Length: 93
Image (cartoon, rainbow, N blue to C red; front, side, top):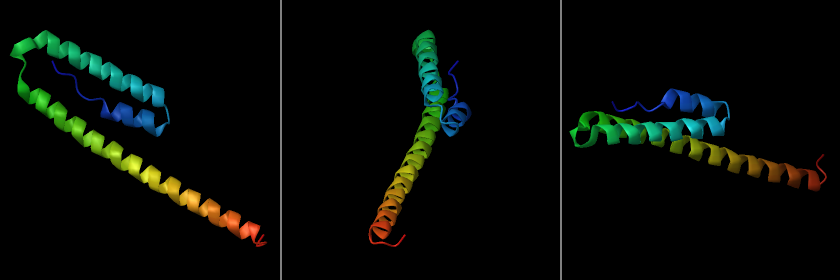
């Protein structure tokens, strides 16, 4: 049986900032998936694997979007900080 991707659990761990738990969940899933594929061998049905692949791609896109949003926010924070420093350096505060 092909294990399902633990998206909800990984998302919860990431939202809580628990990077180790998120990495552990993904690592455990990978191990379970490898074991399941090895156990099924050449008799493995492709539909569950394709469904998992689609779920992985969708989650990866979600993670990429979150990463890009965080990078944008960090850039904006840096610009705001430099602006505040310039204002204070010019005697504005």
